[in-house]
Length: 295
Image (cartoon, rainbow, N blue to C red; front, side, top):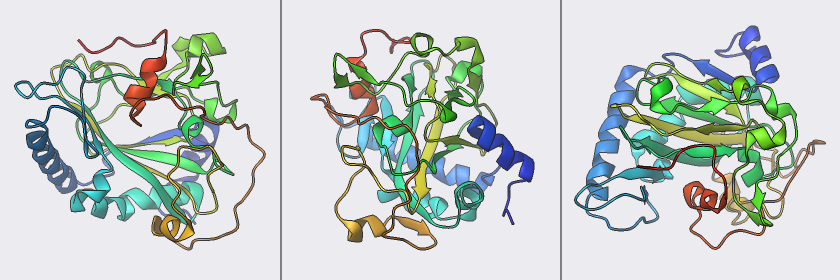
């Protein structure tokens, strides 16, 4: 029996590739995460270049600090790690993927008021193809999210279609243009909601987000995970340091050494561009962009 999702919600996710659950995360958790963000913003103020913890906006200066992303926040924040292991996050994931879940990665995207960076249209699965696509991302809304905040947008049902070509001139660029791939921009749906809501999107769904043009921050914490029997295909951008390390990423249930194979489309994200491993830097390889760049 499902733990938290209704049969209608599970059916909707299967058909459309996304869900929004309002007020899923209690206010006390959101308050603690905001305090953690303030700690990292203070750290960023003393930086001149990005590092392995914090990714700075292109327009960042020490005098006018602008933080774009907190990298792998579960490794540097006990609050983020504890929320990741809570039923607030894992229960809906188990309802959709099953009891055995493995962490892929975490990130906290910071879209600050007035300039927060856009993320071009892409499919997560284009970055990390696996043996099956029981892969999803749960986004925790740290702030109220409306149209002007540059919310996550998705193309419903695109998770059942092809894995689109994310290359430019033969080099992986981590993005695609919907209009050039048969998708109608009018079909894109915004995933909005109050702080404490979560979005869930399938690893193959086409998604992206525009600049934050509002006077309010739009911060979202992503937990990306997969079924334990989904193993990375060679050439994937998934970190692989051996099965022992891979098993340390189990979130719940039991690990396995038996990959489950599914007949799904696959593209390998190779060759890689000679840039830092960041979606923002990789997507600079696009010759045309769907969204405006930072002011």
